[in-house]
Length: 353
Image (cartoon, rainbow, N blue to C red; front, side, top):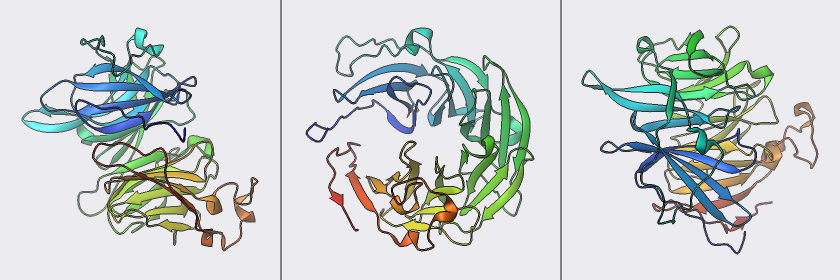
């Protein structure tokens, strides 16, 4: 793709919510949720053909409200969840719900974004069930069990983490257990990540500058990293191959990597961004690759070999790593992303080795 032009997809409305569709194994697919106060909001289903460097899309209506978070079922490619704003009794509340795409869209029969014959009458999503409970406050995010069958989700609502059991058809949801942040002030979860390790029995959450770990079997706290960042923690992600390694990012412009068995200090720090870092993600196949996005209008792909599962070119156990492994330098791939939200597919590579 080095000689290919950048692939750009434009949205009619502003968007802040994006997720990959992991249950779709035959295509590279993303779901994007829009935010509009005046018009019906939309879910854009975007397929990327990496061989031909082209994209195709479908659009579904999300009339419930502007979308602040979106996630896809790991088991059913037609099922997704959203967190959205709606007005209730003259105030704005954030709710969570599970939806199903219309049957004809499940096959991925998309259109070209530039096709003048695109349909102007997109269909509605089918509401399966709500995930909000007025007693627990505003729902900020919904997390699907990573390795599950699509019947368990966690919603983060203000200072509550709620574990829901869904029926096989996802048309009913019941709270099976919950955990509550306790302390001074109005504590609220800002983000969370369900660990794919330990038989999916652990959850990591962020609130203010702290990161906490939870045992979902007892809904009790198992670790707390106080002042993990100098300012608000924005996002978390678990290393897919190293069960104790967790990445975090925040408003202090930093990305940090933690071994949750030793939370006194991070294993490694990255300070490549010049503004808030909103998201951090590991590559699911190559855990040395970490992608971060920031409101400095840049997306940075870092090659963190020294703290990956293959620091010396082969798989090793955590205990086999040398104490000085975090002193190794890393390669950085910098994708400038200006306001047009384009990404440069031909990044310059800086090697500090």
